[in-house]
Amino acid sequence: MQKTLEWIMEGSHLAYLSSALTFTIFVLYILFKWIQKKHLITQGVFIINEQFNTRNIAYMGIMIGCSVAVTVVISMTVPITVFPPIRVAFEGIMIKITGMIFGPIVGLIVGLVTELLTMLFIPSFIHPAYFFVAIGFGFWAGICSFSFKLKDNKQYITLIIITVFVIVSTLFLSLTLDKLPVSNPLNEGEITPLGYIEKVSIFGISMSRKMVPRVFMILMGIILILIYITFAILMFTNKKKYINVIMPIILICLVTEILVSILTASWGDAELLAKESENGYINMVALRVAQMPLKIIFNTSLLSTVYFVLRPLIKNK
Image (cartoon, rainbow, N blue to C red; front, side, top):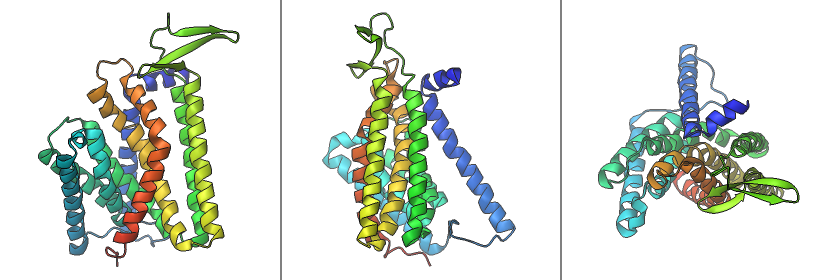
């Protein structure tokens, strides 16, 4: 276990594992859809129905065009958005919406095509991580979209899935962050009444190595508490229309933020912004972890608003 965690912390291995997980789930999903079609399995609550008809293909083109156009216009107005981390964030909005409405395969295709077209119009730093990020946004949003089929009181299932995902990801990332490498084992430390405390340096800020996973656990705990408060308020006020949309979107935001934005995008960020740093990747992970609560709140609000507007216009028959 010790050696495994040490290997994960080396270089960008954590990003490789995250990308491998996405690919594995993609293969399993394709296999499942093949078995479903081959053996005519009756579609149930958890089955995602994807239809590649003319109407949906036209909507795919519209979503790709909107995503690319918005990203290009914003980059011309605010030049800083040409940086891949910011550019992908803008792209991700429409990509996630597409995955939510049309399913994981369509979301994956739209993510890949959107990133390719955006790179043609806004040439900047090219790294495979950002292609995986765009693909991951669409695919994972589509995978999590099954929760939209759960109505009213069945959204408790979504809440349970969110809770399990948060707990598992918190434990895993806490164990991982606990193995943060000491930047200079001979000098980076402090003698206290409690003994010798190892220090790590994250963007020039020195802190106790043991403090990093604890801060992360506190942040994840705050997020989970806010989710339960939101769920309780919506249930007690009988806002079932909103709970049927907001809870699935929270699940999508959590999954895409942790598996894609934090673990995968940090790989590209490290190559772009901290290539000379020995611990560039894990520093980027720590930075994105610190931003996570605000990003989840912002993304949930934005995606919910866009979904409420677009869903009646793009309704699968």
